[in-house]
Amino acid sequence: MEVIKTVKDMQRRADKLRLAGHMVSLVPTMGFLHEGHLELMRVAKKNSDKLIISIFVNPMQFSPTDDYDEYPRDTEGDLKKSREVGVDIVFMPSIEEMYPENYQTNVHVEKVTRHLCGISRHGHFDGVSTVVCKLFNATKPHLAFFGQKDYQQLTVISRMIIDLNMDIKIVGVRTVREPDGLAMSSRNSYLNAEERESALCLKKSLDLAGQMYEKGERSPAAIKEAVEALIKRHPFTEIDYFSLCDPVTLEDVQTLGHENLLALAVRIGKTRLIDNCLLRKT
Amino acid sequence: MEVIKTVKDMQRRADKLRLAGHMVSLVPTMGFLHEGHLELMRVAKKNSDKLIISIFVNPMQFSPTDDYDEYPRDTEGDLKKSREVGVDIVFMPSIEEMYPENYQTNVHVEKVTRHLCGISRHGHFDGVSTVVCKLFNATKPHLAFFGQKDYQQLTVISRMIIDLNMDIKIVGVRTVREPDGLAMSSRNSYLNAEERESALCLKKSLDLAGQMYEKGERSPAAIKEAVEALIKRHPFTEIDYFSLCDPVTLEDVQTLGHENLLALAVRIGKTRLIDNCLLRKT
Image (cartoon, rainbow over all chains, first blue to last red; front, top):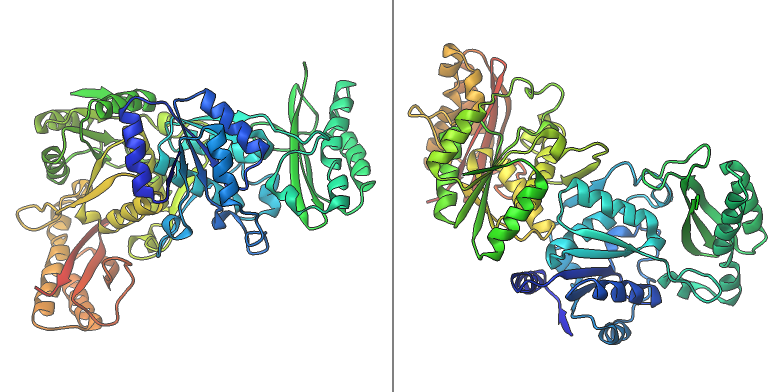
């Protein structure tokens, strides 16, 4: 496994892989790899010849009140796990390499960033789309893999790819969960034992909404009311948003149709967690 | 010479050129090709194996009050000239191909767009950087050639390339002028005979400033005063901006140094023309 730290070296290596006819995949990460990341890597490896992962905690996607400084890091553990999964190249640039002096460019996706996490995390998705654009240009993949847990991120990247004519296929990979249902996230490490227990309210909300939808409930308000009551029964919780929306535009729907996205963000103490599922007619 | 109209076809063709080991160059244009464009193409052809030009009048870089509808077009003439210069591929997408329904992404370069043309042409450079990013992703060149007449555009694109890690070398090509000094521009076709005469004030301004600088003048205000007086002597003229600035940041300078950019925009009747030159110590 190679570790590459500069954009130029990464590009020369990527050119060689492409000229040799390899199908190259990228899994962009912020490190502190968990089973969710490893699943992305395994799926990517199955679907390509050469697997690149990037590890970069991107300051541009954190607001000043966000948890950039506390964001968990474990480079040695990450490299060990990457090796075990069979990663070919780890691209691990420094902040100075990614944002040199006089840096001043921004990729902005307009409409799909206005909803869900875009409301409370101002500028977050500009940071995401910009850094992913940069990582794509540095690693030149044919395929890139993103987790469905970050559904809006997947939507934003997919939109950017189409709009900017980027010749990359985006693949969404299923959310990996702990045995009790909590979606894997690097931020789960912030939770103490009691908060960890309360954090189950996210998956329980998805399940409850799924049951109501299956029984024929089509009113977003009714589902929202039931979910809010469920979440309130869990201590340390505060809902950031709850949305039943169109899975493409992410705009709230008035009545549930054949396919709907349920997305929510809940603060558990100081930790903000997100989860989502599709409600669809089977 | 091939003419390609869709992004997908262009990308497949570009992949083949790269896999065959060709050095690929791009000259992006809005068509209505003149000697300035042809010079770009000749230089590009000399410095690469395969020359792609794009012809696309980009609505996104025109404001509602700009001249998008009147912008001159001559597809047949453009194709004839391209063939004569030895262009390999003309990429000529439709507006629908470049901006499909639900399009919503924007590449914004922050600081260098605040000056010069960025002041009166609000949003213009977002349109430029976005479409050039799209054209790069569609044609996948190793090299791209831009005219020095659009100095700020060249600066914006160069900044975008660095900031977004685009693996493309940008080359600026000297301004081509009519025998009497007027810089080649598609917009020169708007001028009537009297305006055409007045339009010479741009090149005369550069020459006057150059002479003053050579004689030791280092005060931007003194040069500005002389140039404004010169331009006022020409009928139908109105200065949009006159700037003596840093050639990298485009910020106005208080005293002229070893290398300075003189950039100006002048309205001749309804036609807005730009020109520039470097004032530097030889």
